Length: 118
Length: 114
Image 1 (cartoon, rainbow over the protein chains, first blue to last red):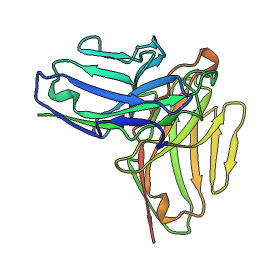
Image 2 (image 1 turned 180 degrees about the vertical axis):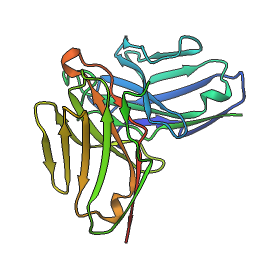
Image 3 (image 1 turned 120 degrees about the vertical axis):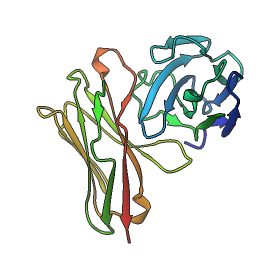
């Protein structure tokens, strides 16, 4: 799973600032998933993207959060006007095309970005 | 609304003994289950999975058992090793319903004592 690269590893933002989290999937992977882990909680699904398409964003908060996966470059999870409750670890996973959507033994996670809002 | 529950936040086991991690689910549509292992400051790593058409899947020291009628699954690690100390997440999905996102439990922290 070291092949999925997330940066930065740690991000500190003041309330009201914007946070941008990046995820470069493994080579050959065109499916990206974002999960959030709040303190003492499990991972919660946020959004599933393929290149240039959002497939499922049912886990995304309705406001301030957005995600993209452009044709070139990493996937970006963007949080506008951050609040303290956004402090969490954000994990990205990727998988190859044709591996059946979400349920993948071939889905590999990155090391995560730990966002702290002060 | 917790659809996947890991009721034991932590578990301590002596090296060489069996570790049993439990997971319960409420959604009867779930038909595919996975266990992930997570070390501090790292992402989750896939460990083992089981489809609802089976009741057991084994991979080396790791065995997952599924009891569909009880909506319960368990991960057995035997023999346990100190390197197994990590947080273990149970996850479930309703594959036949169209590939729903993985739903994770809150995790169980396993400590294997030498």
